[in-house]
Length: 534
Image (cartoon, rainbow, N blue to C red):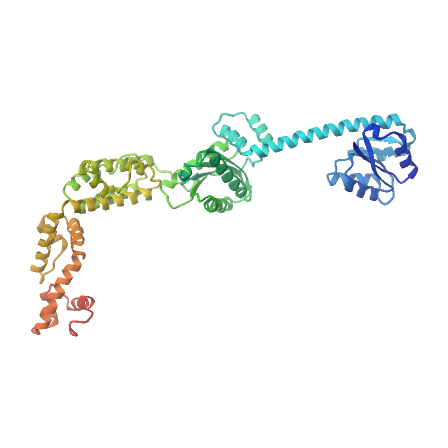
């Protein structure tokens, strides 16, 4: 049944309309009537009729004003206007307000009224059908928005779709609105999603959907933005900003948005992530370029391990330096391991780390470097599992471990760990020999307690590197070389002080200290009291 209301200040007109036809036979029902425009306005708002039959001239509020107010409020009722012969000017005005038809009161016949009602019912039915289709389309878009955006943006980025008209049509269909003068892309890379490897596929799909919803909600608080999955553990955001805004303001806003995303992903899903942000691009073709820039920015995380938000315009473009600047050091490493030259090994590792930080080598070159070091160590120590564990730890796959080093800092930490492992290996290999070296070192120190004794001099006498001597001395005695030398000299000083034959400055000279003040300072530091108090 179609709901109808009648509004006219003449009661006879209202009665005549109600009795003119059998309304129910025409699938209509009169649900109310009013005698003026104000009452009619309130009645229509309360009942939302399909059809309104109204007079133009009425007290309190005329028909035109009533129709205008209802149209402005979004009311969807269809209006039929009743008029007299002398009201054609008002009718013309009413037509501008979107009335459907009009009836001349004196010419009103049942057949004419039925014809107009039939026409309106068909129109209302078509409107409902259109609304239903729009609702279904809207519902489908909402339910599949991420998948459809993903498909669309991937086509644009990969340039499968190049035709601008086709792109514009899809943007319109998907209800995507972007400021084409200020387009940007952000890529979110999840760095610890491996812990979800044991999840069922349904759980993974739910997780990805949840991540997209969280990201979508956050970014749309800042920009007009659209999110979609790019590949496993990687999500894209295509968004636009106001091109009248200052670039710095846009960048600050993006940084705030990105930091909130990273925080929320950690808080809700315990996921660590980093983000790469493009420059501002123009035009629909700028979407593809923005995507490339955001991925390029993401690669900088290898060099800036601690930074979570990386902007393309912060990248200092380096020359493609792929020359192996550390070739000489690597070739020397094998020799130094064989010679147990810890000092030289330390220098090699430091030069390698300097090259990594200064030369701007690629990620693949850095991995090649780590792989070659691993290979050389395998040659140096053989395939003995115990020796390899001393150097590399109990990692089941060294090369798999290398492939998971995601930044220069991570590689540097790994190199330091390997360097320490080599020290431990060399100490373990030379236990018997090392004990003899420690005995000889102590004897040299004690025999020369009245002289200046340096680590380099003792190492030279023993024909080993000073670095190696320093390492094994601390390993076997528990104190450093310099602390042991000081300890021996202070014991000699105490013996001489007890004899009471010498002045303090003479004892200082007899224990290898040219400066009596410095000698007294060292003595107090070791014993807790001055030589005079002793």
